[in-house]
Image (cartoon, rainbow, N blue to C red; front, side):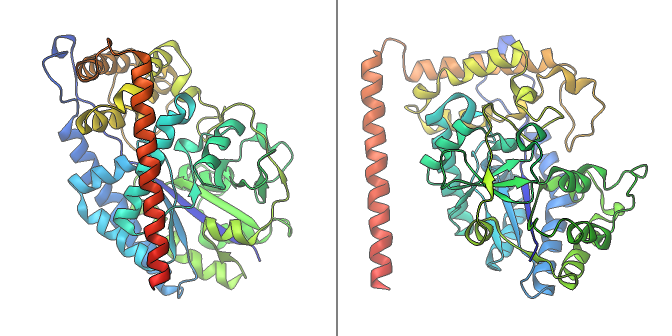
Length: 431
C-alpha cells in the first residue's frame, strides 16, 4: 500500500533590534520585542491555530487514519510560550490523539552541524528535552535545520541515537533514483533515510496559489491521483514543508485549508494510507544507499548551504560565533539563552546578497535593506555578546584548564543520563 508521510517544519524566528556601535558595552538586550510579538501573534492567527484545528478535525473525522508529524524548533516554542500560549495548547491537543509525531532538530534552527559537533549535540539534546516536557513525546526521528545533511553529519546524528533521518531529494544526490523509497547511509547501514519529495512538497508550499501554474487549481482529488498513478513499486511519499504554507504563503482564501480537509477522504477512497516517520522506518526496508559527500539542504535551486555560508560576510560572522562555543558552555544561563538565539540560521540568511534581488516571497519580511546592514547589525551584537562571555570566562584561563572543566561537565551529564535511564527501567519493572 502506498503511504503519505506529512511533516511540517515549524519555526518562528527571533528578530534582532537595531543595535549600533555605541551600544556595545552599554546595552545587553538584543531583541526586537515588538516585531517578534507582532509576527508570532500574526502567524498564530493566520496559520497555527487554524492549521492545528484543521489537522485535528482530519484525525478525528478519519477515525485516526490521518497522521501527521512536526519538526518544531525550540526558538519557535519559546516564542509561542511568550506571545501565543494558545498555540502550545493546540499542539498539545494534537499530541493527545496519538496520531502525531514530533521530530528531533537543533533547538535554535542553527548551523551547528556544520561548525561545532559538541554544540550540535547540545542543541539536539536540549530540543528533545523541550519536546518531552511540553508534549510527553521523546523524538526518535531526526530532521536537521533546513534538512542540512551529509554522510559526515549523519555519523554525528547516529551517535546521538537517531537512526532515521529526513533528507532532501536533491537531484545531484538522487540522480536517476526516485525519492519515493527508503534508503540507507552508504556505510552506516542502520541509518535509514526518508527522502523529501520536493516536487509534491513545493507544489503545496509555493505553487498552490499561483494562478498561472499549469496545474492550478490543485484539488485534493487531483493530488491523490498523482500519488496513485505513480509507479507501483514506489510506496513512500514524504511531503515535508514549512507550516506557513497553511495560511501565510497560501492564505485562507486560496482554499488551502479545504484542500487538506478533503485529503483523507480521497486518500482512503483510493487505497492510500498515512504514516508517521517512525512507522515507515519500522515497516519498510531500504532499497539502496544514498551518499552526500558535501552538505546539502532543501534551500534554493542549488540545494546546498550557500544560503547561509556562501559569502565572506556570512563566513566571518559564523566563524566568530562558533569560536566561543566551548566557553559559552561554561557560562551562566543568560549567556546560553542569548547564544541559542544568535545561532538562528535566519541571521545569516539575511546576509546573503541574492535574497535582496531574487523576487522570492518569504513567510516573514526580511528586516534589513541590504546584506551589509544585516551583517553590521549582527556583528555589533556579537561583539557585545563576546565581551560578556570573556567577562565570565577570561582569556587568561589556560586551555588545559578549559579542557578539564569541559571533561568534568561531560562526565557529570553522562552520569545524570545513566541515572535517568535507570529510573525509567525501575519504573517499568514496578509497573
